Image (cartoon, rainbow, N blue to C red; front, side, top):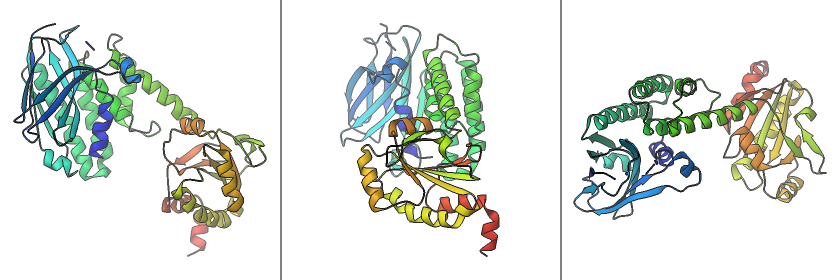
Length: 374
């Protein structure tokens, strides 16, 4: 798992609500001797419109800072926040999930930044000061320990996600009011394809059957899950509207019956997309008579860019232009080339494969042809 990706996903998803009472936060980060910290809070609604609230800003020296929470308002005993650390060298660390308790002292210690900056490991965070902080520290580090396993061996995903689902479940049972745990769940959920079997996705689905309505972050998780499930369902069957060079409208119903259809989403400005075209031509020539069709759908912002390129570089198969925003939303992709294969029933049987993976995917569909060439 990409270390920066994990913490980036947490960044927009652990900001948390508004505190008068005593209490303090002590931060120790010896490897950053001087800089500034920001304590941030946001509701799910604020996250949606990028209006997170900075509730405290303070400079520090000697790798340590002590922050009074007297000016912070609490609407309940605990407050879920996040912490951003900006070192004097402009290095930004965080967001760091931060659990505050009214009238209590929260202590956060961060270490292991050398390996983190070298992309060799996650940095280590310990929480102490109260039992809630210690419980959260164990929960959070148990999750990170599992990610360390993935960092070394990607083949252990199923085992790791099963253990992480149990870690989440046990913590939620003891702390149903926690917003931090749900924000961390959201961060992981956004990494997964909902079409894959995954214990964490299953956990989210089960949690949403009995979610506590007063926990805004739990409700936000369930809303996102429902939206992504809808997208996953709609993208499991080929469905599109696009135009050909004569502005004739095509839909999936206009694709003649074939054993398989390779649908390629691309753009004329995309170098990797154009590099795949000779490969696609070779596959089309070899497998078209055996039941393979190819459809290319450009997502160029300006359809004239697609039209001009294909006039100079004609394709042997159906070439169309479609609304990039609608297509990327429907099939849930952010980068191109993006390729899918559908069967004769227009059901998506494979998605997100590139380069040499295309040859392998097509060869697996026509094994007799592969044997004949040996």
